[in-house]
Length: 389
Figure 1 (cartoon, rainbow, N blue to C red):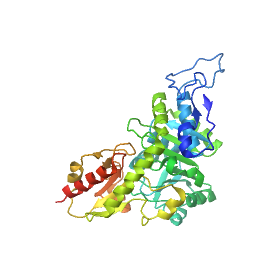
Figure 2: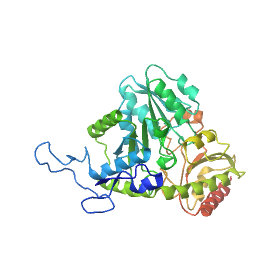
Figure 3: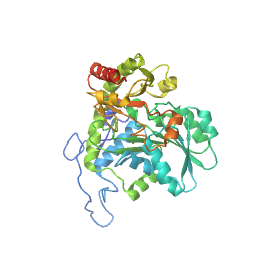
Figure 4: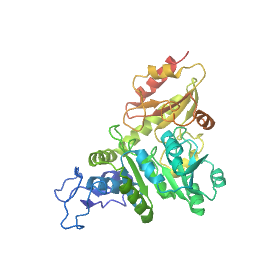
């Protein structure tokens, strides 16, 4: 396999040619699927770079090199799910350590911290990370990292990446960013000081709702050694076939996201101008909190939208009336999805915590797909009309 010559090219080119490109042995333009568990050694300890596929696999290595290239990091790692990736990163910490996290993170992240890592004496405090002063005020001697999503899931809050990185590094803390909603095509947190970037690659990076995967990128060799050790020791790695599918999905990320975002802008505008819609959350709006910060660190407002209907609507009627949008978990696939965060993606978060940050029982999250934008808009508007009681 040949190392890419395209590391200094634009993101659109790197999506196709980044990381490890092709196969030197045959000239194939795609990295093969190395469907093997083990590798023959010449003599004990002498091999061709691979010993056992939990430790390393050529197809997975190509994916890991690609995501590192796209995020402008030093090393990438591929895992069996987004939560496996998050688990590995959280395993950097030890008993007595505390993390500051964004106050409306993905429910699975909250559950992992509150129900699993809490058992190991690793604690956390939820903070409105869109306000850097609140983040700095929350730092105590036991805090070891600041973990953010920007935009947050599902309220799409925007955090200033550089401001949080500056605070973290002033206090000797790690800055960890979940970049799932934007991907490196829209936003590259390492360029704004982040130490670790996490992706649920199940979403936009895969893009077709046909795989489950997680990715991690680090900004220096020391962190890379630590993550590599945990990846191998814990073993939650991505298999070669899913690694191949994910590389294939990433090749079309740019053209897909351009269409996703075009559709999202159209739908967000229609929702904002609908009298039956009370609130619309979309970072592309000029009046969205943090819009100016988003413009500094991201290409656009992405393709995720959340909204609430006014009084006199039944959201279950709304969901039943949809004909193109599917009511389903996940996001970022080519098909359009809606979900009810309070009972689906964020059900693991206690109701009082959800309510305190604005994840209401009436909140609807939309993952805008790449179907015809006018048809998607009409589908949402007719469902809103049908939901009146």
